[in-house]
Length: 162
Image 1: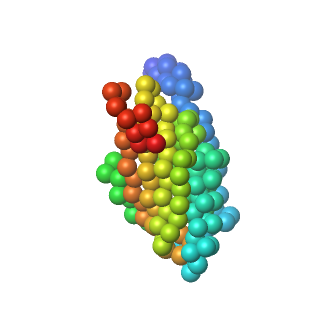
Image 2: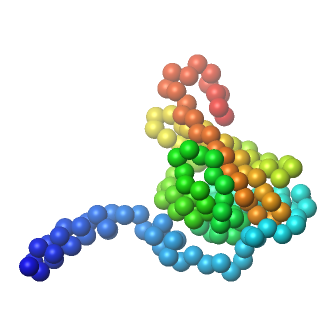
Image 3: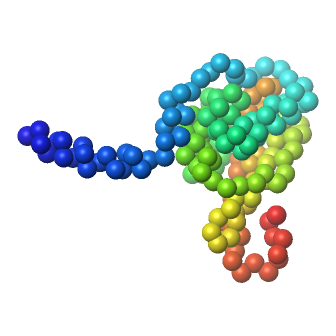
């Protein structure tokens, strides 16, 4: 009776070992030492600095867990039709993607409680374009929209999307 259980467990070991380590480690080691949420009043200059740090941690350090834990509200309103609502679901999804993706932040800006990021994601055979829009309430990111588009292989414009 125990032998089938043991064999089943051992047979699933390669799948477990093939799972990317970073997202699991990141989810387990979450800390809440410094957070900007719940929101507190902030000037536009302070919001811009917060947004720039969020982008730096998310894309520069490739650490979505830290970026989201520090700057994103637990009840994040998510407008992507394929993503769940809330900070934790989005952080977990990005933790499985961002550390392994090759991308370049081409543009970012912040004005009137809204920040945007334009990203080139290297993909085969053509790159994808990503535009993220975040809305802030004081010191905290509370809402997110995004648009992703693959560049067609037969694009006639050599600088299309970038």
